[in-house]
Length: 331
Ligand SMILES: O=C(O)CCC(=O)C(=O)O
Image 1 (tube, rainbow, N blue to C red):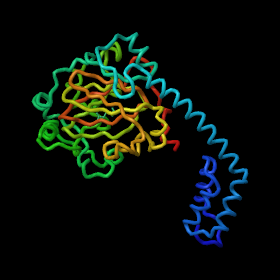
Image 2 (image 1 turned 90 degrees about the horizontal axis):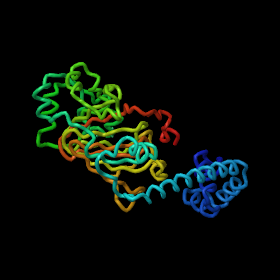
Image 3 (image 1 turned 90 degrees about the vertical axis):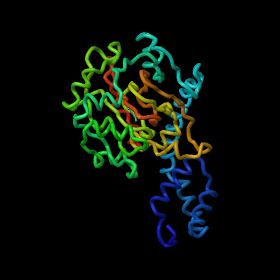
Image 4 (image 1 turned 30 degrees about the horizontal axis):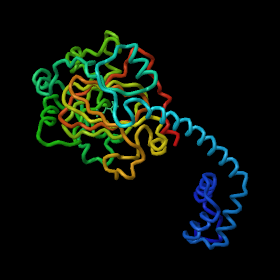
């Protein structure tokens, strides 16, 4: 780009077209290009050429369409924030029955904590070790040393007896190093079939039979961390033992969509300065016997405050398949 004898690099052309379409003025771009080492006269010539080009007309049309869609999302966000719970907390209380759940949560996509929905099958980490300690399970190990444990989960898979996993979970050392995740497919292991047979999910939501392919078991120590991401199905996060903190933001958060990387977010709310936060997050804590309904598309980050057993369930009796929903794959 700095060699005055060559045409502008395509990356700078794309940057200039996008900036112009988003409202930057020629002078700003000329200044930026001269700062990069392009002689001013040359920079002005290039920018004026682009400002008059039909390519810019096309880019402007797309930017206007994106802005129109963003306005629709912002309107939805404003309506959401006007709800009685406001924008910083979730409704929490007894399950209101299926009809109200459908009207107030499922259809409008509104998360809530239900305090009486899950019958914990009496599982504690100690009782799991005592009764099923020999069962071979899989967990991701060495997450703390990985730069991106969610992406690298395949290479972190280890088989170990459940007793050993529980020992790690109950040791005084906390952290994100070892975690049995949904991806470890514990519910489909013959070694845990007897344990899973004890699990009862609310039949009004999941029918009489728990579907192991749509149900996941998460077991880890205090300090496990699942980074900000969204699911493509509605989910019920059932806390069986221990406590977790969940931080959430709605799917129509335009600022978060811009930071999407697949189903994950490039924004890490834990390390970021609050003043620079692109979005306010709603915070909820779940304890034993409580269940958090997380509608598809809602961004959520999950941190274990204590050693924890969680079951997540997607196999609702209502249609629940939004596999097409992957906005982060489009960016
Ligand atoms: O409990 C966790 O660590 C993560 C659960 C979760 O994010 C999910 O099921 O989508």
